[in-house]
Image (cartoon, rainbow, N blue to C red; front, side, top):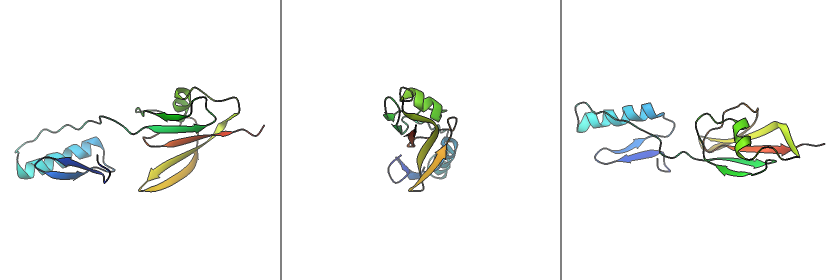
Length: 126
């Protein structure tokens, strides 16, 4: 998917993909192929590479990590080597881009992490 949110396909041109699920993209491609070249197209869409997520702050190995389906804040902290000794293990901030704007919110340990999310683990006061 290119930066503008489209998939460029030979013969049928650009297909909008931003905000669509893989089954929805399959339907869009199949309908475009059906309208121009094929009677009964069989289309399969698979995600080859997902955007990474980022975890910052009071973890042992802050940084960028590959996203896998089903990752939560708890598993993201584990991938980052666990909490540092100064970490606030109850308060986490999430930054997520939605329609080009950064949404910032507090989340819990069992909340899902999406590709491109940034998790901030705060320092505890005492």
